[in-house]
Length: 105
Picture 1 (cartoon, rainbow, N blue to C red):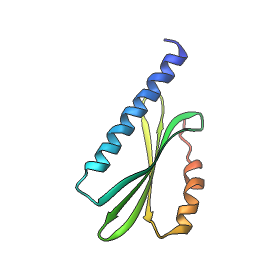
Picture 2 (spheres, rainbow, N blue to C red):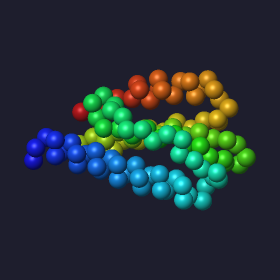
Picture 3 (tube, one colour):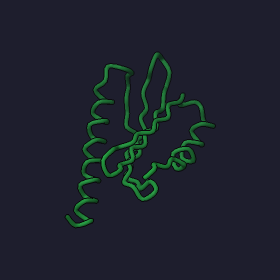
Picture 4 (tube, rainbow, N blue to C red):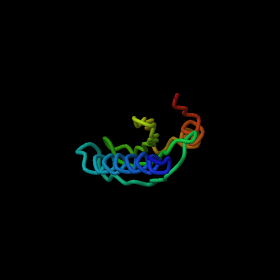
């Protein structure tokens, strides 16, 4: 296999996993008024990654969940941060927190 073929299959797998995750979030019985606010293709330390931002209401609270999926050669790692939408301090820290994540070799 060429390196570009391997990269495509890694990215395709990440796309498939992201699609399944989004479907699971939107069809889950937990929470209401769920919206995908962000679905971005990224690179995290040279690895294919996707960042999702999900908004939902749980028990009358407006909740934001930031999800970062990072694809390794054989595994996908998921980092998730959940916070109240009104917590603007944490919301501002999210990009710094997510960008600091490192997956070992």
